[in-house]
Structures are given as structure tokens and as C-alpha cells.
Image (tube, rainbow, N blue to C red; front, side, top):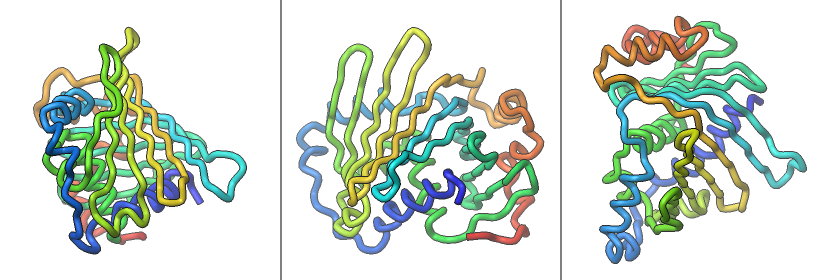
Amino acid sequence: MRIVSLFIIILSSCLSLFTIADNKIPSKTNKENKGDINEALEHILPDHCIFSGNFNQLKQLAKLPVPLSSSGQLLFSCHHGLIWKSIKPFNEDLIYTLKNTHFRVIDNNGPIALDGLQHQYLAKFLLNLLSSDTESIQKDFDISLDQSNRNTTAINLSPTNTYAKKGLNSINIKKTVTEAGDKLTINIMDSKQQTTNINIFNINNAKNDSKDEMNFFCQAFFSQPENICPILSSPQQYTDIKPSN
């Protein structure tokens, strides 16, 4: 099984539990420190509409002695959605669009539609996070300030839904400001204490936030943009593609 696919299944299985029931526990942390939490969220989440970056991903499973690793590139547009491109160990692209249609491209071949609730849940979480939708994030998570100083801000997200806690323990998000550029680290721990660590770095922002800029930015960033950029910008043209779970 491909590494990125494994990450999707595990994380989306946790996140999908949010929709089983709406048994949420009142968030005391959010209410007591709302000003500090809002400030931390605004600082830690992306402040540009269109940006790109590189990522490294490490998944530690309880039954495997060696962590699973992958690396690649990502591009996000608040007008269109997200391209998550895995380069090593496999060439696989995941495209989550704001049109609620999502795709996978394997080895630079044609797109395959992603069907199934797990992809919808994961897409919603990632798009809310990268678009800095603080209202949606605070709706689903109890947020606490983990660290805050001149160069580093970190927050902990704990699910407020009783059913979600059966699959997801916590998500820690940390932003580090360095001379080389900003770095975003996401640590996910499931209910079995298995961890996923994602480092996003080499973050570059587009010249402006217009819809047209995304096309130029995407074409310049990826080595084979013709296989993925048109899907993100015009997903409606690929709605007749056969879905795959």
C-alpha cells in the first residue's frame, strides 16, 4: 500500500468520527483563553491565500518496527483547494478541491476520482486548516496554547466529540519562524498512541491572491504541472471520471 494512501486511511478514519454524533463537550479552554487562542490561531495558520511548500511525513505504527516515511510538495489556493504531491517513495498526487470533488493521480497518469466519506472528511479538515478557517477549527476541537514565544507558536487540538475520541487523541500544530523561512509541524496521535509527524517547509507565497495567479503559480512550481494543475483549477471538467475508494 502506498504511504500517502495509508496516511489518508488512518487520519480520515479518525476525523470521520466527528460526523457520527454531535456529542460535544463544552470547551472550557476555548472560553477561558479565547483571546490568546484566537491570536495563536491567527499567527500559526497560513496568512496567504496561495502558497506552496515541501513536506516530510513520518508515520509510526505500533506493529511496525520502522516508521513509514514519505516526502513531496504541496500547493494550496483558497480559491481552488489543495494539491498534495508525494514524490518519495512513490509518485502520487492527491487533489482536494473546494468543489467537493477530489482526485488521485498515480505516476503522472490520468486522474482517478476519490469517492467515499473518508476523503470528504480529510479534505474538509485540511482545507479548513490551510485556509485558516478558525471558526470551523474551534467548532470541532478543544484548543489549548502549548507554546508561545518570539519564534515559536504551538497549539494542541483535542476532539470535543465523544465518538471522535475513540479514534483520535490529539493534533499538535507548531509554527517556527527562522531566518531560512517559516516551518509548520503537525503531529497527530491516534487513540492507540500511534503518531504521524508532518513537516512543511520552504513555504513560498504567490505574488497576489487572485484566482488567475494560482494557474501561473502552479505551472511554475511543479515539474509536470499539466497532469495536476488543470484538475485543481477546473475540477468540473473531470466529474465523469470513474471513482475509486
